[in-house]
Length: 368
Image (cartoon, rainbow, N blue to C red; front, side, top):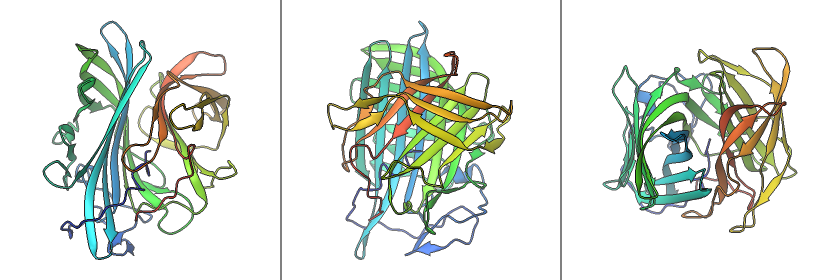
């Protein structure tokens, strides 16, 4: 999801604009930026690339990796493109977040970067190719759609991974139009590869190792507005051992209630989607020593399984409680972590990544 971790960044300088989006629509404008509208038409692989006529966009990858000794790791790699205006001046900056979890050693490390558009950071139009310093995400030419991801955390860890889609791109929401609350501009285009076979190398603890596993990639294109009264959100992506996936986001009001725009969607073995109602119930909490934020930890998720037709409950359990990215550039602290998933009997049935925002302080979500 990560759909507003970059929103509070305030930028001050101008860069040339005027490029057109490759989304083939007549869209409403906010200023001279476009706003996501219903019934979009996408053209791939071009629409995996950048859309500079929207003020906010991100490419977000999380994954679960294993080395040849079956030791487990988690990783996050997010590339943001943000445009903001100060009077007549406009600037495009690129933010990136990287995190690596070493499960066996209970060690979580992360890093953020913020660079102006140009030599140090950029995202291409018409193809997936973005970089921030020496971190990069690039899609091979069709028809393979293989994604090459290079990232790391300072000198402590680095990785070079190849991500191969096992299913077609998923369009969450209504054909890719995803509501984020009330209001005409409270929406994004939400495109996802829900299962990416992953292989490559990870260097950590001074050791190079071959790794393999499964990743998830979101790409969202946004006008950077959420509904009024929202203070944060809970988001989870689950990859089940049976070959299916589940994505849920719960937009949260100050009283803890869920906004009607919240959503849960199943992805079946073929890539087809099905929306279901859900209930989200924290079973325990964890308090950050760094920020004082009190986050849900283990969570119970109840919904209907469209395959069996019956009600199901899952517990989502962090592999490590300390997976908070404390406030860096922009001042937002949030929890983003690798989890295991168990069914009602306690059997482990999948892996997940969970994102929790607005628990340190309410988010004020504006683009400027």
